Length: 196
Ligand SMILES: Nc1nc2c(ncn2[C@@H]2O[C@H](COP(=O)(O)OP(=O)(O)OP(=O)(O)O)[C@@H](O)[C@H]2O)c(=O)[nH]1
Image (cartoon, rainbow, N blue to C red; front, side, top):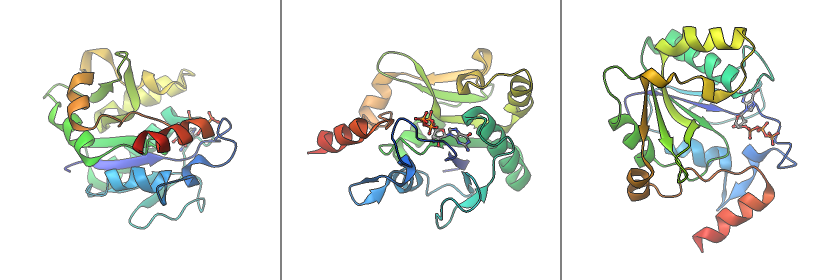
């Protein structure tokens, strides 16, 4: 896959009750599931507090604004990707989407257009999903400006005029459960059941 990858893993897992990145599904942690979907990326960044996780092949990057949420983590990831490999695309994922697959990311990559700076999938209800999306490093000044203005919602990262969306029926064909996410123990149990 011709883009850098970042997993943001600095959350509190309050709803889950313990660190959801370390929760297990089918013999692997949720973090390992997400990492597997992005193993083909040449640069792999883990945005997390230093020492919290060991993920072979992934470079730890501390938050530049610790505890400020995933929009701040995206800023740290774009900065690190730009410093390491220059301008280009970054796949940005949370720890809690264990059904992401290489085909999901390839589908987003194929949807890129020359003017796009973000590619987001739409869920079944048509809502854009900012936590398993592609962002270009050229969005960095915009992301920083929004953070400086007090914004903390990740969905503020993508600007409508330079965002491409992938419709649900396209994902349904390649990676139908990709957007399932785990916020609570019940979410994790439901995912396990869906496979049986
Ligand atoms: N690096 C980093 N990642 C974060 C931060 N806050 C949330 N995340 C990550 O963003 C993704 C989505 O997080 P949420 O589920 O919304 O938040 P959470 O704090 O993990 O969980 P809750 O406490 O239940 O809201 C997960 O991968 C989190 O690890 C942060 O401040 N820094």
